[in-house]
Image (cartoon, rainbow, N blue to C red):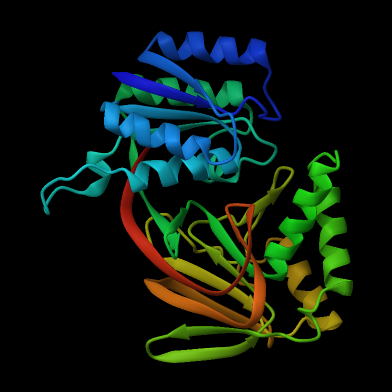
Length: 314
């Protein structure tokens, strides 16, 4: 089996020595080439190159941002095939070694949090010929693996990214601080301006929208957060939206999610399950993120579910 390992050299939980250990372990099972990302977006280019070269497996070592880039590279470079041949079977399989601070996608697949343990699971699966086919979400022309955010959720991600560029370390405390600051000073609480449009209905005056392709939505340390507990790689997209961010209702919603309530509810919540497609439209540009990566502001985003899109080794 021919494989390419795409390494983010800035991955927060690995170093050069651990990367060498990983490379030796993978080379015991596959014919491996190692590629390093050099800039934002380089992971997608390396994945497209892997597809053109006809490799069987692409392995990532990095966080969720690295995974997202590689997935988009794979999906944008898929080779032609017969109409009856699933897209996932035309692409290299994907294996994800957790190397970031949170690693939501890898952990949603059931992989351990630590890179060494995750590598052991991947090696066992390769030996056993085990893989799984999953669906992806798509926002306009970009794919995402586990979540998207529009409004407050994405504005918090923007604050966190700016803090990290100033040297702060990603942590639950940093996210909580960013959330509180954005909640207090951002326009989302006072002027909700997002509408969700589907062919048969429309929901207006939403302050923030979270779109999930799987559960959990994210983790705080070892604790998974489940706004939509029934979201699944095997189904369509789930939506968790808040209409008004009043202090009592917002506090109740956050408390339910933090405590792992099996069915978060409330008068200000809109929850939708297993959607094929919908569009978010905003009266003014809103912060927008995919898989925890801030992508700027948008006033309209069309979401679609792409079923059985990718084979993963897990």
